[in-house]
Length: 133
Image (cartoon, rainbow, N blue to C red; front, side, top):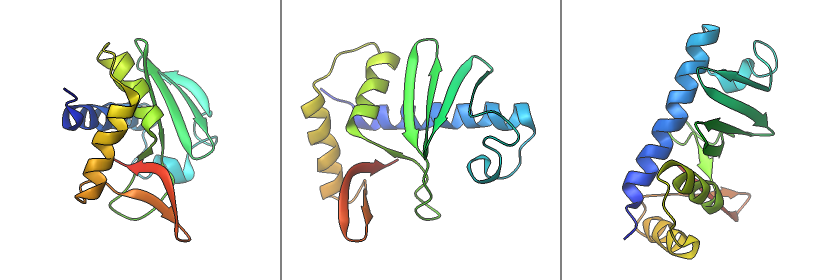
């Protein structure tokens, strides 16, 4: 059984914990993605046991062998983080140390899309295999 709600909450919580550590370390009060990457802090580094690497519109964060990769391209005021099935699958594998079937994970996510609990990224009427967290 895939506890998709637990996985999504934990994924988001991990990202928020990383952001809080970065903001605290560099005394950032605003949006760290808009003004500070590569200016106040390097695109690659470590803070509070988080190793991070910003890439394009995303970030890979590793802490205690847990791998969390996500995107933060602005979409609207409510939808901040984006992920792919592979991003979430890798996080679940490394955080929970369990093996789940990637295709079942996709089915669970798509079921939440169908009922409006999760949105997919749409740009210029093109629907991407990227989901909002």
